[in-house]
Amino acid sequence: MKNQDLVEYLRSCGVCEICQLRYLKARGAEYRNINETLQKLDVKLNENVENEELVIPDGIQPSKRARLGVCSTCLGLFSKDFQNELLNSILASDFAKYDCQKIVLAICLPMSLQLRQLAMWFALQRRFGASIDENNPPDVPIKEAVKLILHPIICEKLAKGYDANGLMINIDLTHSLEDEEVEKLVKLNKEAFPAKASHQKRIEISRGLLEKQYQPSKVKAETYEKYFQIPCSNVEESIKLTSIDLQGPLICVAGRYRKLSRELSHTPWILNGQRLMEDSIEEIIIRHVGPHFTEKLGKITFMSSGREDVDVRCLGKGRPFVLEIPNARRTCLTKDEAFAMERAVDASGMVSIHHLQVVPREELTHIKTGEEQKKKFYRALCALHEPVSVKILEQLQISASFNIQQKTPIRVLHRRPLHTRPRTIYSVKARVHRENPKALIIDIVTQAGTYIKELVHGEFGRTTPSLSSIIGKPMDIQALDVVGIDLDWPHEVDNSKQKE
Image (cartoon, rainbow, N blue to C red):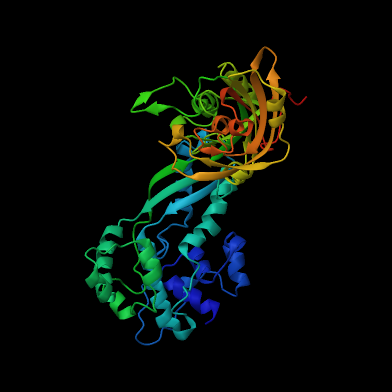
């Protein structure tokens, strides 16, 4: 089969030049200059096509020569008129409200396009015989062609780059013939696949069904032609644009927070429909950071490397956290903007944040994976019933790591399953409180996931060994601070210092 013969037949069927290149398996930039590509593929330009005559074998009826108009295969999808309509519709949407420099088109195509692809597949088999494979489509599929043809054009016109994770422009297309053709497809499906149809109460007609089942190796042309014309018929109306919906990218904003209050929950604390605390770390941070990126604060996801109890502070460098912000209208954060957010959170008096920055989504693995392999550093204020002795101090100077067995604490059984978890304690170092001889300040380094309060008092033997069992005396914890987390992420950035 010569390229010239193929193109001449396609022209006789009302196929546009872009789709002619699809059937010539053109790639990438070859769609930019149609005439140049056709000449490179040894195809004469369509200057006198109306005066040319095709030699068609007996029994094969080509469609009437199409008037210059709507392509019979793409239904005008690749026409300049549609490109202009699409571009104007995007610009008329909320497109200008998004600052994302990368876009991706997500186009919902009518099933009529797939039906026409199959009709042309059958037509080419009849015209060119065995040179047209019955399993592999003879053209570059419409979905792939959209990426090769429409994406570059729209990106160029909008002065945007392409990125699958960029601003998603959801485009819904339809055609006036689709409802009628879907009804025919239901009937065709029952005849073409009677065994499957008999076992299904309801046949789901979908694009996926067409892609998997409808090809010449599975459906006979004679059966298909009972319902649809081969080659596909010419149409008067082009494809219609029914809606455009914009979906901003997912933006991740990371930083570290310090929890300064002993009366603040990690996330909203609601029990039986009643709030037990007025605010939370999550809400304070989202309230001051979120509006810069989105209007829908309720869609933001807050994550951190572990969490504290309500009455536990987090000091030192703070705890790494990240906000996942879907459908973000803004994707950038200047140092000035970040510093203003940090100061606004600091003004709460309960939480302080720093190192605020936008990070790639891939970096979230730092928070999401390997949590239990991290080390946590704590400082606990503990009380005894008697003055601290030298012996007790010596017993609580532990530089070698040791393992404990810790059952799920009673206080969290309502939200955690009952398990016995092995945990590693890396070091313990104690000193007597200056103002109270019955009080100890104990620095503890543990494996992440260790319940420190229970490590101190033992919880009736549910944690073994405990610091209380090590000294052989009852001991309770009065206050606890997290003073360090073994996670060097996100990288440090001083937003208070501006570039000169």
